[in-house]
Length: 256
Image 1 (cartoon, rainbow, N blue to C red):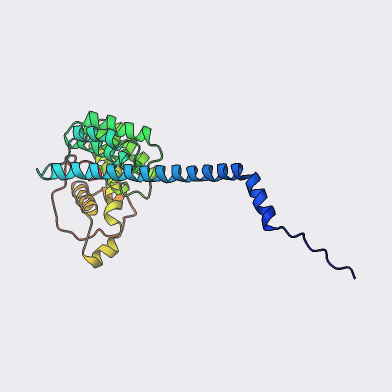
Image 2: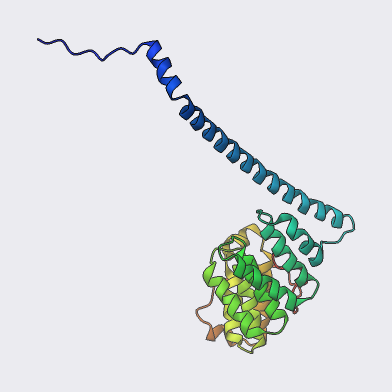
């Protein structure tokens, strides 16, 4: 039986000669890898540093204005934007600037700012808030048809958003203003009856459900026939203390 052929042995001297002949190539490769790693680490460090500086700048603005019990103005947020450009903070600052315009009663400027945000950031996780702000700004200018369309668009596109309930309440408010009491009553009834069972056990209701319940009862008192025209009736509404239903738009910016 033939013995299995053994692989040739390479001496240390041959290895040294091989390395010596190729040392330029080897050193070049090592240098390239080292430079590439250094560039990556530098960029990563620079990016993290930029994010930290942007966060610190926003925090400093809030501290400075908070000391005077005021919130930053739209102009202050606008001045901050160049400092936080190309960071994760930039979108938050841009949206806060739009909210500040709304809070100051500058509804046309707020509409423009919210609309700009929506167009510039089509995949932003902040889009539900931006769209709600846009709709609210339109409503504040009595552009009810456009506002209603935006509210409806928000509830359709972002059904799981925290702004859906407030958007539906706004829709009901507009329907009531347009003398469409049946549509308004139906939405008030649905919002007021959401989780009514659990709320009756806990004795709690959210401000949204309280407002919807108050509006529901008010419309029912004004027009008892609405219950028949909107049959079948929803689940019993939670028992809550009566309060004054807001008739005007909130003075706080959307999302606050």
